[in-house]
Amino acid sequence: QVVLVESGGGLVQAGGSLRLSCAVSGGTFSSCAMGWFRQAPGKEREFVSHISGTGGSTYYVNSVKGRFTISRDNAKNMVYLQMNSLNPEDTAVYYCALRLGFWGVVSESDYTYWGQGTQVTVSS
Image: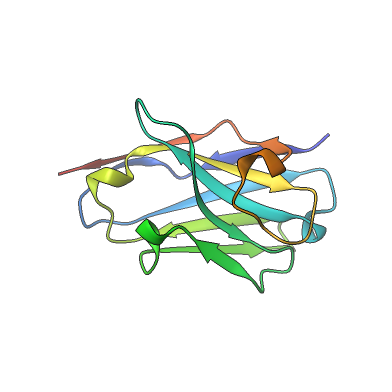
């Protein structure tokens, strides 16, 4: 049984920063790519970033490039999303997801396990 638990969300002013964490239990973590997705109110869930099993390959949606950084600590079974220069358009529930494959992909249907989500609210 693989379980993902996100933390680190909250309320922040525009221009501020937050660091999301995702703790993973079960599975062979270092063999699995991890992804972050988000769902804003009234919108479909969208891809944000992914990272390969060893962390050597990362990818970001254009809207967060240069502001967000994904990383992982395989010794701790953790994945992180450092979010800087936040703006109100970043307001959403953020989800981490695990893919049973080494390389990350954009499609959420390729991720098997999901966390419960953590709310990020950016005020203007």
